[in-house]
Length: 348
Image (cartoon, rainbow, N blue to C red; front, side, top):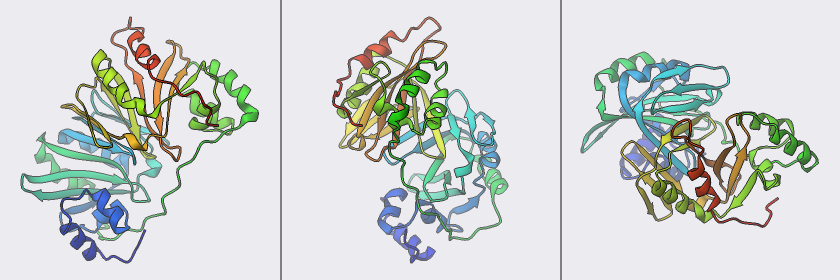
């Protein structure tokens, strides 16, 4: 990232490119998105605490908002109210009927309250970034939000440092697939004994692997590789079947989860979009490099997911079927996944 631009230079560039999204403009300018936002401190932007333990419990006062989490290939937008916040040393969470997130606090570094004047009025958002200046989560107010709570919330979260400049760390490289063929048999044995999906990461980490590395060498009984261009058809099949899903999209500091259906599917160029009233998904189909159907044993029966990765090995999204009642055996969900076209060649 360049450091040659002053805050006034950045503000001038933003003023000349009001039609561009902050993320795209920051990339063109060679700066982080957080630096672009910070440059407007005192010009519609207030620096606030980036600590989720401080910020998250306050957001419920805003009422209904739009919560956005993204990675380089996928944007996940969910409308709802922030409800219960549960703090944890290594992982925290917001649990609610519509806003459901998993937060990794060590990565939360910068926070901003942003007010932007538009033709349609003032747009207000809370934006949180990691040490590299990449966005972790943004919370946008809507017409239905409690706007009267905005000013008191910003005042409460405001920090002493109101400098328009920040220092960011280099962005860490995405971890590619880690494979330990010598431990493959152990992996398969421990995989078969799983009783909860959350055990998986501990198992592969202990064996010197990661998620994608394990998928690449797993038995066919647990993992099937499917065509990368099958994801659009998958979304349409979920819609047509009325299948409810649990759809995860995240980055290194935050994961956001959608529970429910997918109704309006609209491809636009490279983007695969879900455009529903309270949930939007924007997925770059051309970024998908590997897709797997993955089965993990649990006490309630097999948990079967569809998972997509980019060319660097980063997880783009993960999707499970959601049961519609205790007697739902997810046969429809399994049928949707069984119908996806497979790729037989090995990628190890």
